[in-house]
Length: 300
Image (cartoon, rainbow, N blue to C red; front, side, top):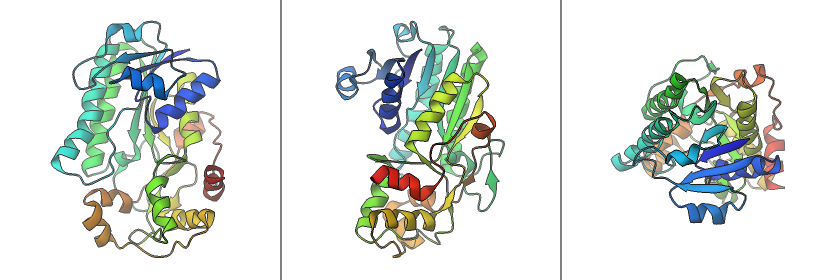
């Protein structure tokens, strides 16, 4: 299989390129800086130059391609200034819209496109499967527009899979980076009440579910990319403290988080009890279902 990846140099993208290489698939990237991509990802077959906000990718990028994986998106971490909000939205909705425009005449069978559990907003104790409606708030609105842009590919007969990804746990990226730094200083305790549900997922299973979506023609539409056992934030903090052998009881009050992180703090305080119903129904077997064991695997 020849797979075209937008966002190949990101945290998930690098792991995906490695997994595709291991199983013998041909890897092609869309990137602003092809030379940098080739240096970072020596397993690439080719890297095509593309500015996602300038227009569709070059037509030659789609030649011989069997599937497209879209992992583009500005990091949501940081203060949400107006400029940051615009970058978060444009790097998802506008970039995906341009990607789909480029795909329109290529007749590609499948698009696996990133989204996020932010789609659901703050939902308390409600169990959220893929048929749950979107929530309120900025990120929910972004995800709705992001998914709509990707779903337009289905008008050309492309099978579209929407990866509603949770909090990715892996070494060198994801939510563990900043959280582990706080934990090492003894400041990794409950955020707010600590009772909010965090839909965590190991990087291995993020990549595994992308490969599953590429290979399984019955997988279509939204796909919750999260472990079958979501954990409360305080339990994530405690588990990380145990693995790192550091105390994890000093709380971070909600008003402090909001003062330091601005509106992004809301995402740490939101509760999403997200369940991977579609993944399980389609036969995907998760490699990491226990939080403590997953963290030990990452930090071993």
